[in-house]
Image (tube, each protein chain N blue to C red):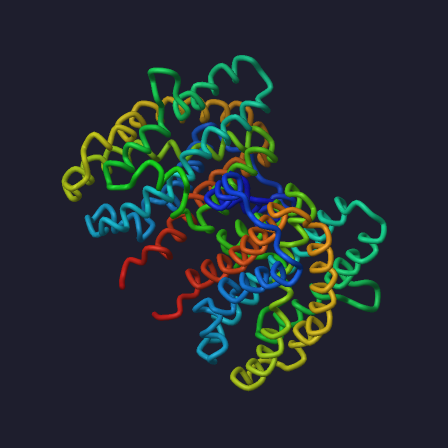
Length: 248
Length: 248
């Protein structure tokens, strides 16, 4: 009934005696979630990377994904408010600053608005969220609620899609430059910045998950949290594809 | 950022001086939401009522919709916990009993499980939620969170899709009997029961909304809440259609 629960898996967890994974096995299990469920395999994403999206579809993706971008620092603030130690919070707070920015260093949300301008969307059109479809809103809100309500280590584990994002980002930059030459290249700064931010963030989160998941159940819940996050990203693309269909 | 906010509408509300609607005008505005956005117009629903769905699609719809069915009494309990008077709670509590049932009067969730059996799904397959797709989960959870976090009168207003459901239910019973003769008719009891329950519930909710929305802003927020609920129903069908496509 809660966001991100996978009842059939939960039932399994409660009914069987599972083995504790080694650090390496646990890391492999987490990475296997990405191999199967990360949104790079979604048809809309595949079409994007084949250069098949129209300007209108690219705009729809950027405008909808903005709702995710503005929700990420809120999600991270929810996690921050629940991290039990000062050291952890010192590491986590940088994520919020990366997105919200500071005076003079405008951050990821501003960079996303510039991406919007680069694809032909006015700032107002994006910030007023006029193109954001309900399915995107529901998926993103589920992610924020997960961070607010689940144990902090599960919320941390759900952020581990960043293990898979640098690969995708570096491909995406090249593809947008090559296959969508009408997009102003200055708009791609967001993705450039993520190339260094995401691996650092993923390292921190992975270290926390490997350290604090100390029982077989903890480990399985971390894997389930990461699967949940993959579903959040996938469902966003489903909803975007519904609004901007691939084949008309 | 919250579920069910429509920022562009909200901005309008905060920036303009709106007139208070009369009771009749307000009722018309609420009904107009249904005419435009109720899920009877969704392609998956239209296909169902034309007899075009396969057995597998009907099963997918019943299995996914189960997640909505079991969330309705939770949503109503959240509203119940926030209703300010004993009289209101006395009226509202019947909704929960309608779904959860009592000893000897098994209620709507049990009736839905029987519908599942009538279309060829085992009880276990339905209750373990193995077919429930993330998009359905996110949409339904957004509805529960709306009831938990929004002012109670908005949560009540969001239930007003029941104004539109009796019409749909009575059509649906005839259509399922005529166009899907393979469905055991005993499974249709859920819809029969809703024919009398929904109008009674809608009357109560409409009376509360008309009485307690006393400012132009209250009225607009009630309309927005009902639109949000239509989006919740619509997004469920989007997600079901993605999992069980209409044209393959």
